[in-house]
Image (cartoon, rainbow, N blue to C red; front, side):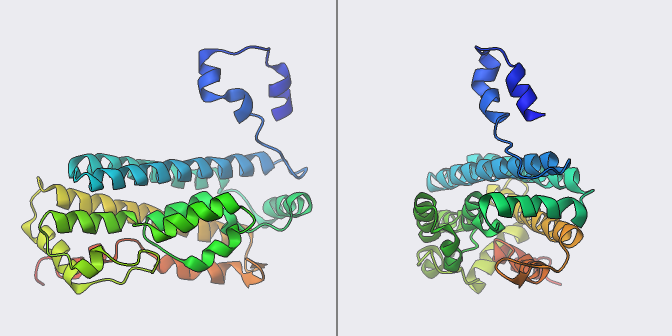
Length: 279
């Protein structure tokens, strides 16, 4: 199907094709099996990759907004991220019919063509996760075959996450964010702070719809929800198409993925909800 599209295209281009780069785009589906469903699988995986890259771009934009203390623009950016994540999550619906009989021939072809696969080597996803504040230095080992990406991710590991920039901006605005929470070794996993809990509790207790920090808190919460939704859909898809076979270098795929459901970004936003309303 793909080769037919490419062969039938006349030489030259149009403004649309030049901008979207349709020639290149429709030549990127290099199938590795004879499975009739591989095209659907690969296209959806590529779409997710593009959405992760878009989300990385937007997260970095939101960080720049916060560094400039432009909370209103940060909220506009964060709202876009929520929309992107919802769209990315919807791609799972295009694969909801997959069974082990559909997936395994593709994985066998992938192993024979490119070597044994691990989703841990997805650098766009890992960059997004680091920007969301879920830092894990041990994940870098999977990117040693890609020196450029290794350096990119190592820099992201050591740099402030989106939430770090939120806390720093809150501190500059006069909120009682401890210096230890705002200025720290950013490569180390973030430890929730009771003082930061109280900052968010104060913002929610005022319950001012016009407060840009309250809007930001809800945008961050929506992002955390959509990120967790993606991981849950991934876990269910793994259960449905792969079962409890060993993956990730011999580890049961379901057992490896299940603990990641507890990795929810922006912890104090969730902690503070236990005290909102005073009950």
